[in-house]
Structures are given as structure tokens and as C-alpha cells.
Length: 132
Ligand code: C2G
Picture 1 (cartoon, helix red, strand yellow):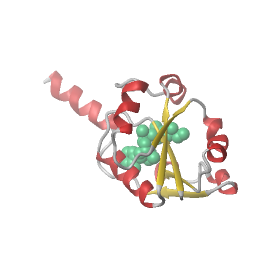
Picture 2 (cartoon, protein in one colour):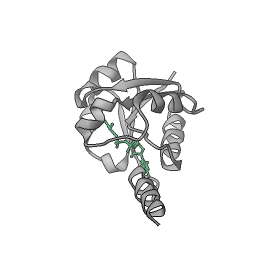
Picture 3 (cartoon, rainbow, N blue to C red):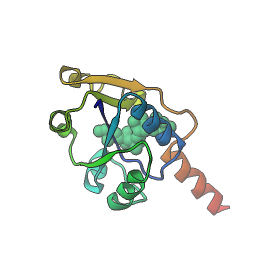
Picture 4 (tube, rainbow, N blue to C red):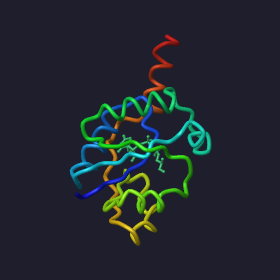
């Protein structure tokens, strides 16, 4: 069984996230998603609309996702790859190059981001729409 791993906040889930998760799953048979905790989001400088528990519930309902684990630190990836016997690590290409060190332990694949959508954009457009 070929196991794939990716990480993210996955707040206000949108088709960019789904495109990433679908393509990640296509690279193997089992997809593990490390979802950023609320505390780690603060470290990343992000404040998600949905809590960790809510984002976890939503991700676990996605057909491409087989397992969700918490992401607490930048440093846990090597341990996660080893603990979960990961064959392929996948991220959107906004992260291109940032995780190449993992190629010692598994394949590293950066997939093109879906253009024209982001959680930040959703928040901005909703804010503008509500301000009239
Ligand atoms: N993504 C995408 N296209 C978009 C938006 C996001 O392909 N239009 C991808 C990102 O590249 C990432 C995944 O969807 O691979 C999750 O995006 P975020 O929730 O924004 O994740 P991020 O904050 O980048 O967290 O340790 C890694 C970090 O936790 C990644």
C-alpha cells in the first residue's frame, strides 16, 4: 500500500483544497493529512475561521482522505513520515523546495496550486460584500 502525506490548515474548505487532496490521493492508495492545530496556526500567523476539531471533522468526510493527524510543529514531518511509513510527501507548489529535505525519507512532490481561489480571498470578498 502506497501511503501519501500532506499538511495544511484547510480552513473554509474550497475547490483548491479538494483539487490538492484528489491529486495527492491519485499518487498512492492511502492519504494521511496533517491538519494544523489552532496553536500551530498562530505560529504560522494564521487565524482560521473553523476550529481544529471542526476542520478535522470536515476533512475526515472527504472521500480522498483516509486519516487525519494533528500538525503541531514545523519539525514533526520526518517523524510523521517514518511513523506512518509514508512513500510520497505532497504539497502545493507555493511550498516548492521548502520540504526537499524529506526526499531522504520519501518522494517529495509539489503540485500546481489551483489559481483564483484562497481562504484569504474568500474572507476578503465576504467582508466586502457584507460592508455593502
Ligand atoms: N492549495 C492549492 N490551491 C489553492 C489553495 C491551497 O493547491 N488555491 C494547497 C496548498 O498549496 C496546500 C494545501 O492546499 O498544499 C493546504 O493549503 P493551506 O490550508 O493554505 O495550507 P498551508 O497554510 O499552506 O499549510 O506544514 C505545511 C503547512 O501546514 C501548510
